[in-house]
Length: 372
Image (cartoon, rainbow, N blue to C red):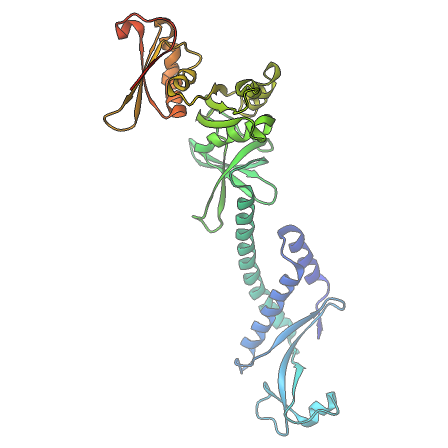
């Protein structure tokens, strides 16, 4: 046995503390590396059963090989003479197999080779352990909100960068398309993100996180609105243009519960919390209705609707023709068509909007149901 000091144990403790690799596993890799180095060094590479043993109390390590006790030795790597064996164990007889220490005198050379081999094995094991850790963390957090600290910004090009966020035991990557438009991300800031997917395109899989995904809005409402968390209020659909505006349709089977009021909260405190998390993104809470006319009318809020006519689109899908007062046309369409675009996503209907004068008719200022 050769004493190698406390360095091995210190390294093992550090790996266990920082990378969650058990000390015993690290030491076993070092021992395997020493055995591999021994087998390469000795002329008889076919020797079997060789193992390295590390004594954690003394800090000594040795190499041991099984040898058959024989009257006359013909292969020193497989056999031991009877007289020599009896010096070790007086009552041993020929034919028995003993585990004999074969630690070379030039152990330092073996240690150097073993260290290189162990480093390769441990690096590979660390990579595998990291992959497994990332996969486990992703499975535990998939489809949920989590909070992390921005660790670094990886610049991909002039207008593209990845925000790397420390999520605790693992990192998450937020690509440009998953970031809030116009948001400035700074190292050290804490942000709430949605755990989106696991990408295994590189050497190490990446957990992709998002602040732009519509499901982040759902998770935030569940966080701040108890009635949603306990399913008294249900989120039926979400339409979002991240960083600008979101429409969310809510419903409750309980006639005593106002789903819109529950989401807004007393003096708007609940929705203000969500808006703050989304960096002042505008949020419209819409009352869901099974009647598509009512639902479409609600979805186009805050515009007032005169009539809604529903049609089967010859090209497939469903189309709604909406008539609004002349002074409500721009409000119904929204800046850049955003309001009607989000309403269409929210309801699943293609929506065409016209003013009363464009429609060429006389209308009262109430919503009329027009059958398909």
